[in-house]
Structures are given as structure tokens and as C-alpha cells.
Length: 619
Image (cartoon, rainbow, N blue to C red; front, side, top):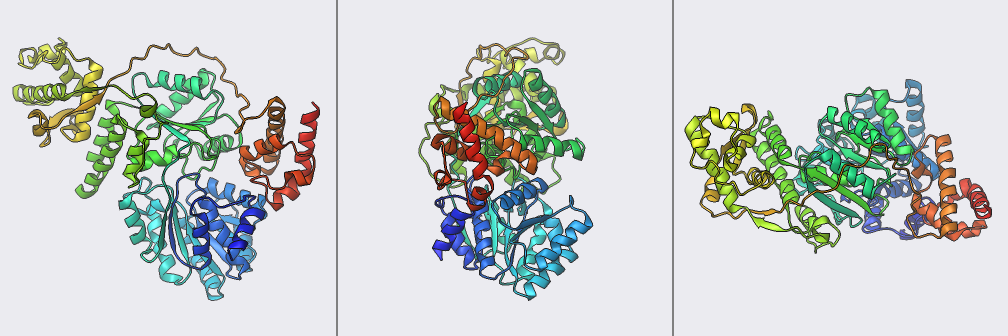
């Protein structure tokens, strides 16, 4: 049995061996059992249900239904399966009534191996009736529920329509189900199991480590300048994603990047559907595009060569951060996850939780998740250890994150914290009202302003008590106080600062406050319109002739992808092209065994690949 699975892996997908727990998962699903699969982005989750779907259909079990929340992902995965010679289809709103009907009929005739559908469609009476017909004839092979964290209210992308998927267990008893996600803490996992009734499912939990990603978190000063410098220095000409919290910021940042010579596009829910689709298609199909987006963009994006993900605003929790940063480096090659954060990020996220109409229990969980992300941002030890520890995974210092590569200096902010808290207390005691962070810091530092004079705060005993601290230092202390819950930000009262029960322990000196020292930023803004053109970068070391072959193969692949209306990586991954360029094949036999070339692709493209290599060798 295992041999046939390996044959499918090799002959259909062009890979010589399974990775990690893939083989165990495949064998488990082919045997007709339920599974919960947690595997990091880029870890090969799709193969975990695609190979069983092919194997089970060959055994006469019929079609596998894949629940997927995104139209773009359906289109690209079905296109990739067609390229590999697998019969697959999707049903979504992009199809006409007649096209949908034809696919339904093909499915009923047993001509489709995998059918992709959104959860909203799957639970309609019409679709359930189709599944009933297949089920009665024993031709409903398996359900694969992708992005399963969407079923959980504790997940970072909760979608109520996923809750209706309980019908699969209730209506189609005995049909194996697989729930897959790239990110879920213990609470979210429990919710997935309960909501999808997977209590008897075997859990396959892979390491959450993505060793090819370098995590860097910087204190926000001039975030635009910091981002431009990061891209200019480390990723000129590379594909990347920049996340911003608001639509307006997305638009402004995309324009700024374009002005700086970077090929950037905006993406947010305020754009019309056609523009959003055009921008997403360009990002997937063209090289070197930077997408500036709200978090509405990216889930399920299968582009393997995203070299960086940058956050200009802090996400809500570690799950969201991990999921979004995981869109970088899916090909396993080096990539960067870069984030700039500041006091206002902390204030905004706290306010959104506090002002939410949700119940207090839910808010408390969300505050805990935000605190974990703040702890990661403020950490002075290995980022990767902190990140993996959140998901219950023990690890050693990675040697690759910013803190490992450049250990930050630490200073004792306990005295500064006590002075800040004392000032918040004295101000409220004198004025009978609360004030915002800027004013409190002015009082602590002894800075005379119109407001300090107006309210008589220059007479306070704490006025100027922290004159020796810089504004940057005090902002760091405030971030930590808010993260610890020792200061509450009242979003309904102009973001004013208020003491909490946790303030007492800090005021008494019982809780130490250790902070990163702020590093000076001396570099100037990059010159505008300094074109950041793409450089040919191969995944492996190639000599000059190999680079010529690689460049020629990429140009050929881009043309084929345009003809097929597919992203270039669906034709061949960069790593496959680089391996071809290195081997410089002269015959069909020379192409055998190169990772990523299955039988169908060998038949479809071998002649053209050999022609391109031959021409490149001559020139």
C-alpha cells in the first residue's frame, strides 16, 4: 500500500519522498479514518489530502470534497492539479449556471477526483442533495476542511459559516474527514475538535518552526522610512507583502512605495471586486510585486517565492502574526518577517478589545492573546523560542532572529514605571480626570506646555521626577505597563490612562520592569525613484552559465503561465528551474528525477525545456 502512495507522490507530483508526517497522514486517511492536521504554512498540507483523494478514488471510493474559503485558492489549486494530470474542479460564484451544472454532472458520473467548494455552497440544500446521491452510491470518498481554524471563535479568522460544517458528520456518517490548519493554539484546537465533532480523530501536530524565516521586530519611529530602508537593503526587486491596519494607510503606503521605485499594489475591501482580483492576479502571476494590504489579503495564498512579510501595524494575536508571516518563504528558501510596532499599536488593539460588543469572557481571552504578542514584541531573548513556546513547543535559541543575531541591551525600567504610575495617580487626584500618554510623559519629564500650565500640573510633586528619561524610554515603559495590565487605556475617553489593580504591585516595586534599550537610527531616507530593479536570484548556487539558463527558463515559464492563465509557480517552482539549470539536461533521461517534475509535466514540457536550455547554452 505504501508503495502506491510513493508512486503517486513521484509520478503525479514529482517528489522523491514525503516530508515530516505526510506519509503517516496519507496512510491514515487512505484507511478511511478522521484526522486533525496542524502543519505550518509551506509544510505540504495539500498533499496530505490530495494523495489520499487520488488513492481512494483508484480504490473505488469516489470524489473528495475540499472545503476552501477562497476563490483564488480554489482556482490555483485546481489549475495545479490539472497541470499534474489530476481531474479536479471547483464550484464557486465565478462559474455560470451551465458551467456549474456540467461540473455537478461530471461529479455524479465519478469523473472528478477532487472538488473544491466554499462552506457556504457546501451547506446549501442543492449541494447537500448532490452529496446525498453520491453517499447513497458509495462514491463520497472524503472531506478535507482547509483553514479549519475558521471554525473557532478563538481563531484569528473566525467565519460563522464554518460552524454549519457539523452537517458533514451528522449526515454522512462513516465518510472520513480531515481538518487542516497552519496555526492554532491549544484553545483553538479544542474548539475545532468540538465544533467539527472530531473527538475520535487522530491529531497530527507538526513542528510550527519555519527555520527559513528570520523574525525581526523593531520599535516604530518613522515606520515609512524604516520600511523603505528594509526593502532597499534586503529585498530589492523581491515579492513581498506589507500589512497595514486601515484602508487609507494601505493606499498611502502603496503610493509611497511606488514613488520610491518599488513595484507595489494596494489591496483592501474598499476596492471594487475587479480591481482586487486584478491586483491579486498580478501578485500571483508576476515577479517582484509588493502587495500592500489589510489582513483581508493572503489567507490561502500559495505563492512560494514571497521573500518578505512586513507589518506596519501590530496584528491582534500571535496566531494572526504567525499565519501572516508564514506567507513568506513557502519554498523553504530564506525569507524575512519584519514588524514595526509602537505605543499606539498597543493602545489601538486594547481599545478594540475593550469596545467590542463581545462578552467579558471572550474579551479576557483576547486580551491574553494580545499580551502574548506584546511579550513577543518586547522580548529580549530568542523570538523563535517565544513564538514556538506559545504553541506549546520547546526549542533552543535559533541563532537567526534579530535578538539572537544582535542581542539587545537591557535597562531596568522599574523606577521609570513607578514614576509614571505615580504621575497618573497624582494627575487624577488633582484634576479629578484622566489624561493621555503624551501629557503624562510631559509631566514626568518636567516639560512645560499649554496643558500643564492650564491644569496646574507643574505644581505636582511628580512634575519633572523623570527628567532623566527620554520620551522614547518612557514610551517603552508605557507599552510594557499596558501589556502587563498595570495601565488601562480608556478608548471611550480619548485614550486616557487609568490605573488598575495590577498597578499596586509595580508601585510597590514588587514587579521588575526590564526593557530593551532603544537603538539609534542614523541612516537617511532612501532617495526617491531609485529604481529597485529585480536581480536574477537562484535558489541554489549557479555559475554564470547556470544563471543564464535559469533566467531563460524563468522567461519561458512566465510565457507558459500567461497562456494557461496560471501563476508561474504552478508550472514549475523556482527550485525545479534551478535544478534544471544546474543539470543542463540534453535528453529526456537527464530530466528524470528532478524534484517537481511528474509524469504529466514531463510529457507536457520536456521538449520545450530541453530547447530553452540548449538555446541558453549556445548564447
